[in-house]
Image (tube, rainbow, N blue to C red; front, side, top):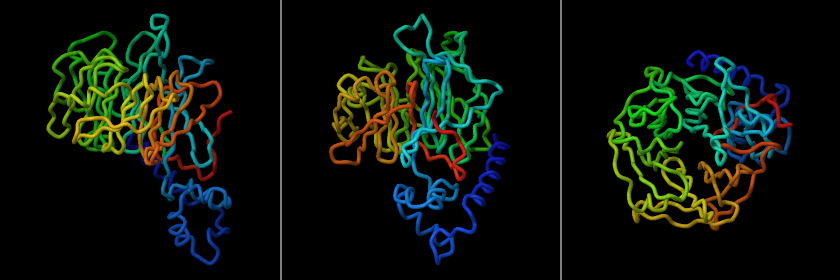
Length: 377
């Protein structure tokens, strides 16, 4: 991965040098570096439709990146393949990501006759501006990933992280403070050692190119489902089952390396997917009622924000930039909720035709000075 990042840095400098016609100034009468500073104060949506040079500027590596959706999608035409897309909110277009490395190939099992009522999980997190795939299942029911697979939007590159000490599936996966965590789960078969183990990797720490073992769980009760470990205020919060069922909850203090019981009010309102905005504000969706709520740690209670039929059956969610993005029931679309709006304004982002959503993340937009990566068909 260090070599991949070095090569990507060279490409980024070259793209930035060539991102516009040198004979065309951004603002007549001003040097381009001054014009760049002026234009960077405006929202990209205000620049997109003015002229081509400004449009190219907002996608250049040197311009402050706006946030976009990144989605893992499945298709009925290739039911056991994962497809990677990004949705550009400025142009309102879906685009395919560059393909992952072919060696080793990414092979996952999403559906099996033994699990008719559900899809097999593909677990991913967003951390430090990167999309990281951590766990999935192969056709022989083994872990699909021996190394995390990482996509960097600004460099438009994939790379592998350090090998997991214990590759796993059906685990708890999360991120906090720029580090990635996996906990519990199982390998090809159940092992109590794996079900109680916890590993941490500091993404971007070149001096620590390995996973570090952390304080383990007291038992294997968190290996029943693929679950999200939500990074929040220096802690990882997780429950042992999804949905509206009765749960057990734990909170991991990442600095003290200790596990604590989850507060009663927090676990009582954890009735669906949960995500944290900038690891500071935690949101949950009551998947049966379609109610989005915000956690108040002072009162140990969840406050209502908005309730909508569109949010019922929510499968997964992420939060960033004042927005909460939700994978709808059945993966048939992505609902975006503006939690900064007084009434929680929401709208639906339709998926590319023939695809269903597996997961959604919010990350910086890809650099595309030449508009060279393919759009959806």
